[in-house]
Length: 463
Image (cartoon, rainbow, N blue to C red; front, top):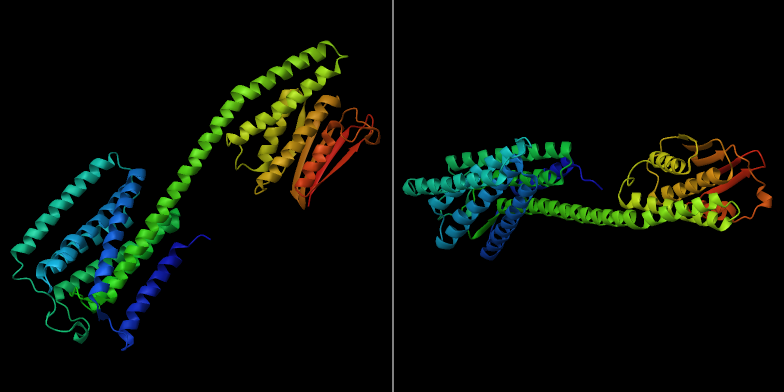
């Protein structure tokens, strides 16, 4: 079942928004819980997932080499670096919230959110040299981080912490943070919302599954920042609802990238299978088909020069049938007909037989898509055998092939040749037994109508 991007993003908004409302409305549900191990586990999981996601996004960039993929890679890489350098490492050094950690994290997150929104809105433009563009962008971001860290470090004594570290987080009311920090979190939340709507809209138009998950994950990221606006988080010993939602952003992003890798693997496997099929088809064409063609031509020439020698005539017929089967196998292996409608495959098959045997055919085939491959295969074998018999044995001026796709499938092959008496003919003659078996194999039935000097009609009906 194909997921609808808008439905997935809406579900993410309902879950994240519902959790936020639950914390606000229900007094018994706290927005913060003291747990050093749980906080460490969440931060570790988020960091590992972010690192893996960054690596996978680099693979997507290498594969597609597009501007939007470059911006997405840079956004996640910057967010990962910011959390690692300015949040995780300082938390291990300082036991209390430090202005340097707070402000560098906020500034870095804002820049990353801006890149994420740009990735959602950027056109899918091809990059001439994606490696050079990525290298330049990474260098500029690294310089920017150093400059940001230097500026924050110079003014660290003048920057506010945001909350009084001496107070218990659960005793702090809503919207109690520093105004500048709150404004920054609002900006980050707005950028995440823009990214969520942008990725969802693009997923609707392109069908790209990664964009679907990006829209949902960005929605979690936006509500995480909304939670930080309502309940500012500064404490490494406490777990906030915003921390849980931020982990949700990382998890959904990783799911999307993992699904992308899975699709790449399937496409690569299918490509290798197709290459191997085509190799086998080339071997068949250059080997078996050429030898069968030589046998058929030689045997037919001997049979025509000596009309009384039926053995060579039978040998030529067998070789020609084998040649037809080998050509059909080559076409199938080469994927020349893989997903084409049955009516087109029917026309191509009949014209191949008619051209090889030098007979005139008239084809009337209604459009027919969606017929199972095994059913198509059996019907094409039946029509090949029937047209071959008409061309070789009936002395017909014209062979008519008709296919209708109304109430069931009906395939008719009729000629204006000499005809024969079906009751006086060996039932195994002209491949009738094989054709009946093929019709029965696909749930159909074969009907034969013929009389001397009245031509022959073969009809296959599949309800």
